[in-house]
Image (cartoon, rainbow, N blue to C red; front, side):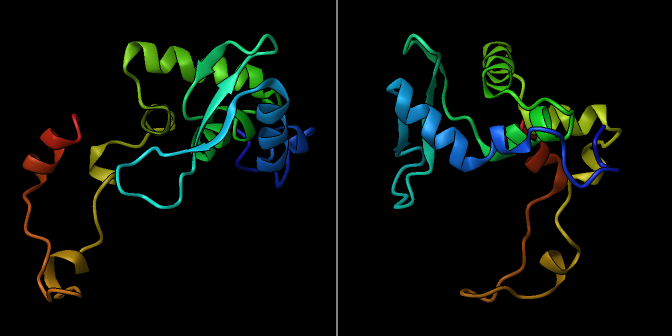
Length: 138
């Protein structure tokens, strides 16, 4: 793991700017709606050198967990790994965290969500962990 180094060699090859440029040059989509009703349109479609679909969306968390954190500075490799994970139903961030030793016990909201009323409705979060785990497919 790369958590002891500030940068990996070749980091600029997996930067957001490089990814956007590569997607545009290859004829992919730099932006399209990923979430219903969202105005940001941060989703993308990553294609290979031949313009063939590889994955959607190649997210910054995946680029970090399968790239920067592991020392891989090649968006094509990262995209191929993301596609393989998509094909078998593995969430790339969760899988990376699992392999790093984190469990569902580490994936919890801070206590204040359960105790302090939150705006705009001034209510506390009141969903039991087992219900949340079932919804998130733990």
